[in-house]
Length: 608
Image (spheres, rainbow, N blue to C red):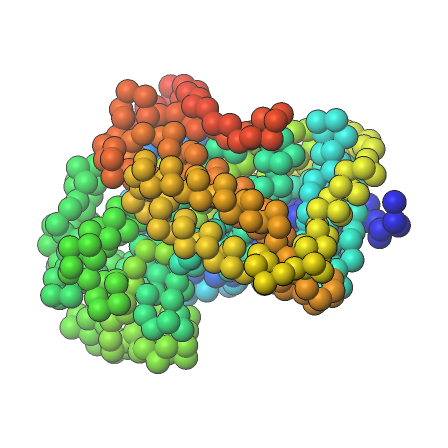
């Protein structure tokens, strides 16, 4: 076996977004050696794009808020298929994680008396999102990075992991390569934390960065871990659809939280047409009351634009399909109308939503203080992911932990806005804490050279195909393009069995094509090779989404079946579990959700 550069750590964290950095900080604080591997440069993780805020029941704006209300909101938003223990821990611990972030230097927006300011967001009963304008994720990464880099952790930037290394069932490290030079690297570790983020790049229109190719989901699945809830994929209702220079870019829910309204081509506010019974008591039935809520009236009910993301997204699709959409296949989101309500509205918008204003002015020449935006659903967030223990974040494989978007459980069928950032902090901290405990309790495992050589051979096969490629060669960009088009069309926001069966057949054909994918050139600075390697992960998560969506024959949360439009109250409260069989095929099963503790049931009943 060639001599590959080898790094040894007690805990290896794969991913340097919010969850990865928080895990690394906690593990370092426990006194173990920590290494972080990131696919991009440190500070470039997709977490920086999170805009709206961090959901935590601090009760700074409304003293009625507490962890019990937050827990009930999260469970209701997730349609009660959440891991209730994770939802409980999240609601209880999020305030401390936010205060901790503040102590480490995060500069939050403030109330008049100096406390952390909180804003309204969809699905949350009270103003709950601690924020930094609309740049909260950027401030989170800056703070965690600045604090964490002094803890002694070693950072391996621009490195992609190809496979997890195992000693029996235990995960004992990872094997990857430097993206810049193409050189292979071995990472030996007593414990590994996956914090690789989402899977949006399996779709044509997405708010996700180029890194969101499902790496952690795929690495864990092929190593033998289970995935759950993969059918629940959140399409954020407001991504830009025009002009092309900003297509797919997210328009934060904070725009609606500050008073933005959704209009069809006739200028009508269509969200009043369909308010679910579950939310009627909390939703304003007049435009005036909805505005008062956004303006800070704690006794007013929230506007219909702040219903859960799955519902808002489907209402937008309904308008588009009915021919009432905007000229470019979306609807209008208008924050500029508030000039009718407050003086100096333009300055107010620029102060509250600085990134939104500058981003769209610079990239699209749209002035959101004067004109509406054209928006539509964009693939945004995966509720599904690696199955982990609620308290420790360890998967069913000893030594393998996961946190953040690549883990699953807390969000159930639909994530509430802002819960993602507090999820990163709460469970990133727990993953780092228990990974360090595992590392201290176990010796380093044996690294099998055959696993490494097999992974290296697979990674280099595209060059062999490229050397002998003819006029009909399969190139990685075309396969990725065809996959994204197919998933967008057949396994998108509205699903049908016949279309998903076609998608499975299409995935099989794409997988066969991917086996013959060809790249030319050499291993240095070769983006075609990187794309060829990403295909394995994209095809794996796409199949998991499709098979899980076929298995769940009901509509629940973010999963909407046109052929099964109602919830299955009798048998719907299950997790759909995906795992890799010994013969290499993907298997799916339903599993009942464990009974909730009686005191948590009482909390939900009281909140209803």
